[in-house]
Image 1 (tube, rainbow over the protein chains, first blue to last red):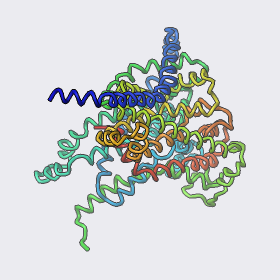
Image 2: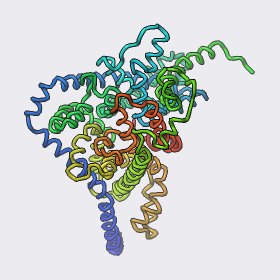
Image 3: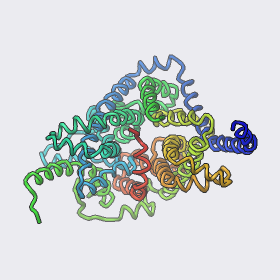
Image 4: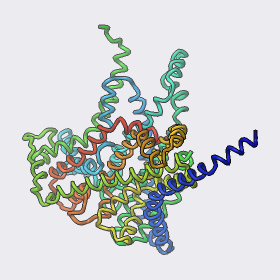
Length: 290
Length: 283
């Protein structure tokens, strides 16, 4: 038996191994385009950027720049408040959109619009709505109360809050959709059985929905953190970092330094975010590379 | 017809109490943009919910480039289109080849490449923009459309490869084996078996990359600067340079700019939902 097997092996081996090598050659040829892109536009820029940021004097300069400290605090506020509010609303709305009603189906089609349209015109639209003299919001406030509304984008706290609101407006539909997918994957009979046992809506959420969704929820929150760190548009197009550079976040600050021709300072400010970004990247890679 | 019970009315009312604010919240910025697009300047600035004299005159001004800020509108529209399509095609090519190589040909080190791609996917885009700008300068590509196309390919392809790899891992190995038995070469396997079976995911990924490039603002505004080179979003941002910007024209241009991606999104929603959201976050 062993002899016949090895005999047939020797017959089929040469074409098989030849096939394997052509296959491997093709495999390498087909992966080379991406590797080239990766080397030229990821490895080189990142390496070059880190090299530019190597000088400790940059970090002293950052430390002494009040705008940097403010931007770091703003980034944390943006992340902690923006993401948690967004994800909690998304979790809540995913339950709403899971209801089977024709009008809710229609609403879900409209609801996705902020995600489907580009953010630049819509953010600029909000920017004009908040214009103190001609904006729709202050016209509305005036017609209700007879008083002039606040100068929305001129107060750093309010302006940053508005930037967070714009960020939520833009990305809420996406996360609601993802959480809705997770919610719809929960077997219906679990709910039916709990109904028979007389469970309250809160108990259903607490003991069925949440346990099956918490991992998805945590993953979404972390992925959203990475994307929010890279959200340049919401702040830049709404406030431009102003008033008086008090509403910058790290992503807009890096670009600000770049525009001022302080490239190594720009890189250093990004390097300061690495302790926050690396654990997130590590966790997400572990989750997704399985 | 059965009358609804009190309880059913209560549930419906509660749902409406959520649904109406959600609708208003979603629509306000978009409606505001639309309102400006159909309003003459005086109406737009008066804060009315509907203009006294709705007009399409703003569209006329945009289409005929009859304003200082709009004198290169069509060439900018063309730039946006070309860059989005080129980035989409290139991403599709690179990502499909890589996913085929990793998932079907089991190229040695494929897992590594996948992880490197994922690593790129998790670099916040605005952070990569800073060194990318300098890199493009070093390559002599600044103010060249290729810089934006290649930057978009860099950003789009990691996710594209990941989604395509997930999808192609699901195709049975027996298919490849049967094709090879029938004497198919690797290229024929790719062209005649792999690509047709992967079509829904390829449509999703192509759309994803085109929309990403069409919508991109930050990289476009860093990498391109000449008025005849820039894309539409950069042109929109440039409106803000003046103190007395013609906001009604800005919103009209923005509205025109937002229409194609919205249309594409809804046209391919079927693929997008199946191919992208399912893969976006694996639970």
